Image 1 (spheres, rainbow, N blue to C red):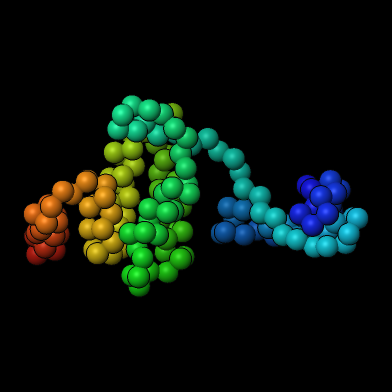
Image 2 (tube, rainbow, N blue to C red):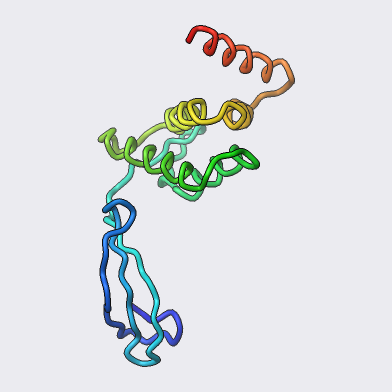
Length: 154
């Protein structure tokens, strides 16, 4: 691994530990040239399905886009970063477990909405408004009425 400080290609591992509940290996490294220390994280590279967009374009799954959408929906809500990361981990696990090579963005969006509905109703409505392209206040009202009726049934 290249040193991020002096770009020397020779670094050595000084310590390795499991991280992220065993899903990653955390390594402390030291540069043999400048003696600076830094941390790296190693994760298994498993193929995730490609995402089929609404216009039938195919693109690789982008965890950053998923995180960005969740963070926007959950902005100023009492939800911790850990909870967001747990949602992302569950969704990625679900993608891998599907066994599919391609998954529609609609299905992935539905999974995200399930997670948000269970976590925070305000975030759910925020995400739904963008995901379903609400055009007016009536669309918001319909979604809120659905939430209320589901809550009353429980």
